[in-house]
Amino acid sequence: MTDEKNNSMQREIEIDVEEGKIRGTLNIPADAKGIVIFAHGSGSSRFSPRNRFVARELAEKGFATLLLDLLTDEEEAIDLQTREFRFDIDLLTERLMAATTWSMQDKDTCRLPIGYFGASTGAAGALCAAAEFGSAIKAVVSRGGRADMAINMLPRVTAPTLLIVGGNDLPVIEMNRKAAGFLKVKKELVIIPGATHLFEERGALEKVAEAACDWFVTYLAAPVPAHAE
Image 1: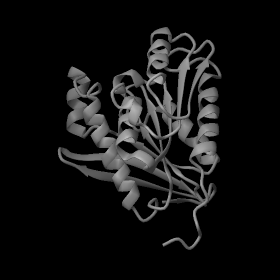
Image 2 (image 1 turned 135 degrees about the vertical axis):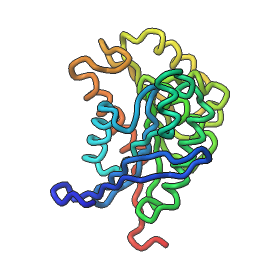
Image 3 (image 1 turned 135 degrees about the horizontal axis):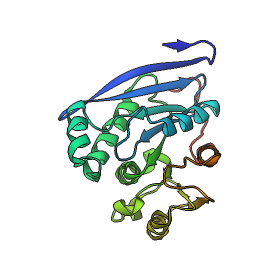
């Protein structure tokens, strides 16, 4: 589907995983300079209003976005009752890696440099996947992320990493400060004053999006040769 007003293309996609299929929404603006794959937080989905807001801001800056459901429909139904999958970082990492491999192979996205935007436990999955893929991942942004849950993988991350935390989210601030000490790459911890974990306060999410856009413009955007093979 093409949005003529915004000159962008949107697709609903399915990615095969061992346990079934995961779904995503792909948006590609004209002359996209990179793709940001979203790893949502615990109990959220590709319909997360916060992630969709950030995705729209990224599109304005010329980035393609892939909003994902990291769980299959069956797993999602179970997780709503038991919460057993949302904290399974190995599973979230595996699903994000599957989506990354898909992006590397899809005709519409294969030439785009890849970045990750992770929230809550999804940020831990994003950092672990970034460690596994190495230089193939160009930038990572974490929003209210549980980077501490990826602590053993952090020294292997090669992508410049931005950690964004709400100023009133005190436990997560300390978790991110600890995690930052394990990162051996370009890194920055940004604290949004007055914001809580979900950044629901007036203007807080706008500041998240601004910081994320600046980070991806700096570290993800790269010219793609018009006639690259």
